[in-house]
Amino acid sequence: MLQCFRILPPSGSVVKASQAISGEIQLDQLLKKLMNIVIENAGAESGSLLIKREGDLVVEAEKIKDDEEIKLLHLVSLDDADLPALIINFVVRTMESVFFDNASEKDFFSTDTYIKSKRPKSVLCIPVIHQNKLVGVLYAENNFVTGAFTH
Image (cartoon, rainbow, N blue to C red; front, top):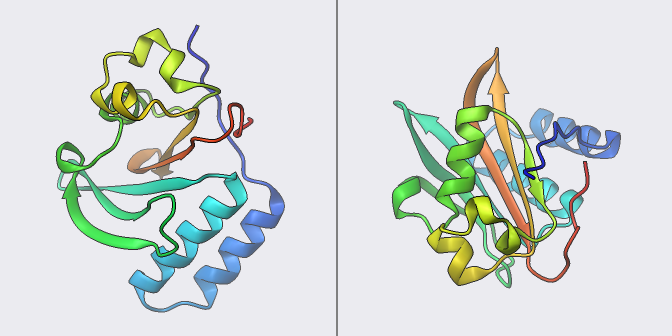
């Protein structure tokens, strides 16, 4: 059975994010700070922020495990990114948050090329919604621990 949940960030994360937003003027630096906060507070190893531009999702920022730096990619399409397109497209269609204790064991997404090759353990994928419209998607994963993300 597919598990879908709305996820509310802990209040400490909200405070950190608010401080980052209020103290940052440059969008690039703001994206880097927010991605660091999300990755750190979610317990993720890696993550990507995709933004909807002209109807298509593009990767704006990503953190790859083992890489300390958040990379700003600006306009890398989902088709060209090394991400689980089936999971991300599911979140786009349903506008619901999903998390998996072990994504590679979920039959629903077992045909995804990324899932087959990377075999991620914990996966979190959240829609970014503004005024009831999808504006982006946040994807995060942890390959060390199953059940790293909880609702």
